[in-house]
Image 1 (spheres, helix red, strand yellow):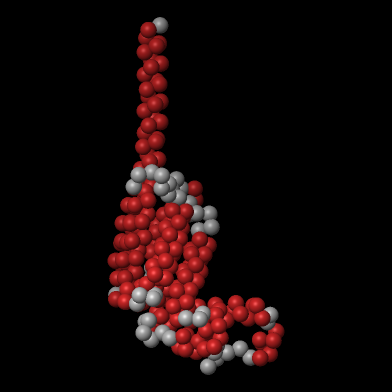
Image 2 (cartoon, helix red, strand yellow):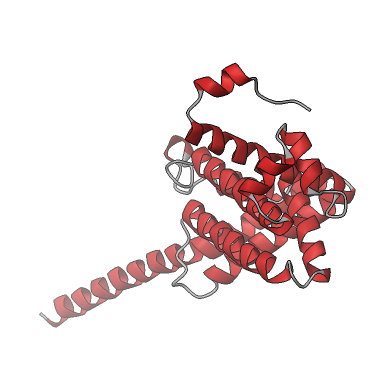
Length: 237
């Protein structure tokens, strides 16, 4: 079993060592869950993969449920931070184009539902459907992670959810991304995924840009109306 030498441990403050150990356990738990599923992922297996003792693992996470729900939430938070880092100014607007490159954002959101994290979360959801002790914790976790994903989508897309249909469109986008993630578990059809991303980008743009077009048309109508009133006044004079 891998580990850290005594000399290395002595050079690292105890609090930092504890944080590093916790992070290694969390990442190892997600990796084990993605590779072996719930049945094959025990605390002992995770501890061995992380290079720590089982006692150290149970010191940080007294129960198996504690370990795996914390692991999925931890990695989900890391992915959220990484996604925001890709678009630090919100939706990218290359070369001053009138609209942002929303396709890049849609593709990045789809990416949240692919890879080991989504696979691990899926195993956790399936286990929760059969285990009463795990179900409420996973339900609460899914609510928090889903709410954060929605918040990020709204932020990066620049969506105004006070307008009719916008919130439903954003949620539909995330539901679609989850469905693509499920499909990718069996076959990684990249060409199909790219076409779906293209189509959903058009849908999102159509909904988000519709209000601006209506406002522009309204402004033009007001201008034309004002011009007609001025013309009538001039004729009367």
